Length: 291
Image (cartoon, rainbow, N blue to C red; front, side, top):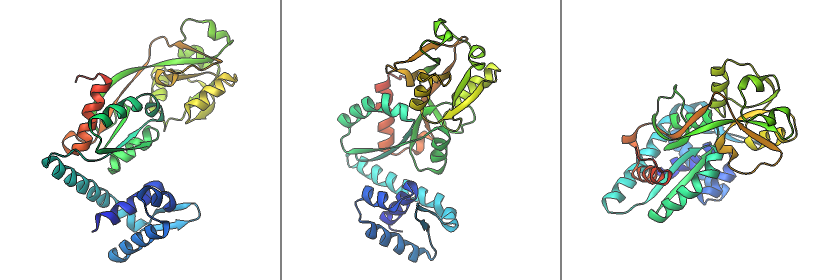
């Protein structure tokens, strides 16, 4: 199978849109449609369901999708190993991560990496924990920067501990406390981050044995902060979200203290491509990780 056709199909599936896939790959939309059509002819069955909202894989395509992803991954790994033997550092790293890590970690990591390996491209996909786990399972990304959870079957490399803080509106009676317990917050209207997006907040609440009065849920930490600022409720959030100044919001430590562990999740160290291995090594150096 032509590797370019495989990449064209996988990009269309991952983006869910032929126009965006064509732009990313440098095709016209009609050119990309032709490539996928020729692949459908070679395989003998339709691969995509097309609608006004985009494209998705057919049931037959779903059956072979793990094989296509494995073929793509092995092909890229072969190219990179061959380049490595020739003394060249080239290739692409596919990284999945939280939007907050993209904002606060990645710029420095990418700057360092680009200085050392200008021939390697880094492709970044952002989402919450549930979708990151799915991308790792299906092999559509090389590794993920995310938080640790004990049910994961992936190899885990810890980077740092991220404390979880209470967030209340300025002027709220609880804003005068030096520290807050989840029990104090539970009786207030509570804004909860979607569990599919962040397992850690739900875990911390469950471990504390409290049942907050959840009035609102959101996947967007900036939306949660805006709702707190407008006195719609209180919340708890990882410190990584709170590095910037957020007027109208008071942040307090929890008692007892609560944390999440951030790091790198990947299926297997030995299966990483040379480019992904180099990226991981440089990321650890940038983050000051010595293990």
